[in-house]
Length: 128
Image (cartoon, rainbow, N blue to C red; front, side):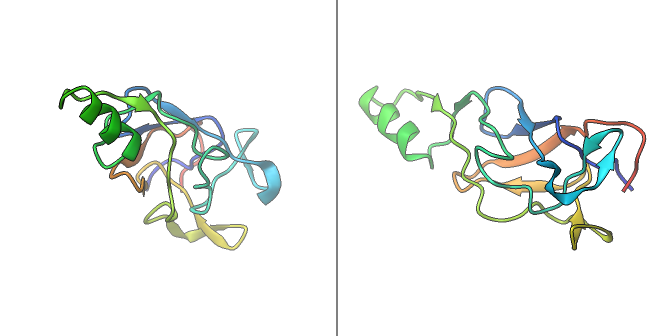
């Protein structure tokens, strides 16, 4: 059983150079520690999942192009998260807006190959 993830949680992509922040809109009307609680569908790029500084994934076309232009020297480019699938696995025993809740053990995959994990849930009182 992990901690329930809320808005402001610190997240990290395996190909990003800096941590990011999970933003959760209060539309689900569920709060934990006075912050909106997240479910597995809080995976929208640039709305829920903010950039991680620079991207180092060669699967990212901008990184591949910049690296080719630099004669094969890895050249990171600005991160633009590309998350198409929801967070997994979620907590099916706890529903938030009829979707499984998000705890700090969940992961989200970026289309460029990165695995986004939760470093800090944003609160330390409510478990899910």
